[in-house]
Image (cartoon, rainbow, N blue to C red; front, side):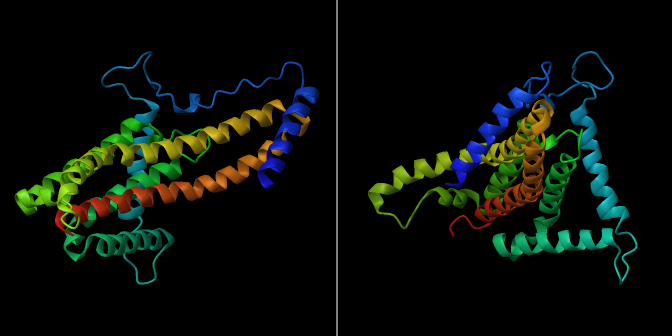
Length: 266
């Protein structure tokens, strides 16, 4: 019932906007334009061209350094705001690694902490108006997922040798089903980096595209433009939550994969 009311109100808004909006106004909305990679100091893209993607990736790294290094350099007993945020992030990720992957995975905590801080910072920077969201591009998330995939795979063989293949052999299943399940588990394993990367990029891109669509309605509906503005505020609040959740999901899945590499028989 709530969905029917929502779409009914949206239909009224669109029709009313088409009636009362100025004649030159239109619904020329291009929500995907915000994801176009464009050169900053050149006329075309090349192998070493500095782009908006490059700029916001660099700003992400700078923001992390300012928070974790500069903001925490004093290590005061009564922490500053930046030190408090850094300590909360540190404790949160450390507990996650220890609980999900085990105490023997704590040695890999610095890499997982770096991964989480990069994703969550890039996500939040992408919420700044007129910014560029780095994690909306599969090229970025696929690199991150690929690093995780190859690291845990190599680590699994280094730590367990051929015993790492036990991850694909379901010994609890009936013997005739084990080869079939092994093939399924193998396919599932190689699909991991695909789902790992698409999940992050897809969720981030979808939210930003929805905000852009509502922003286009707000500009085109004239007198009734305040309706999409309310929707933008609601979706933006949701995107703040999504920015953190997607970084959390990416990181906790990394911990799960790390646990499989360290304990393939579990």
